[in-house]
Image (cartoon, rainbow, N blue to C red; front, side, top):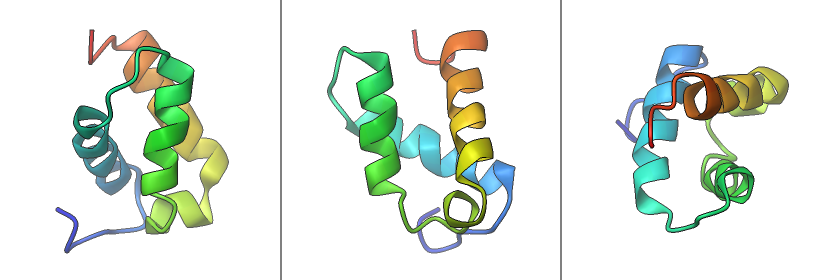
Length: 67
């Protein structure tokens, strides 16, 4: 998916999930920050960092997607 990045939440969520699996960190908030470092050039993160964080936190804490 890295070759096709779009300025929308779906594209960001897919990229976030891919990066999340590659980071080894027990502290969930720190892990989110590390993923954001790797996605710092994603179009959605660049244009809307506040919503990017909300999406990440929703996926981790509300959906409990990666537990």
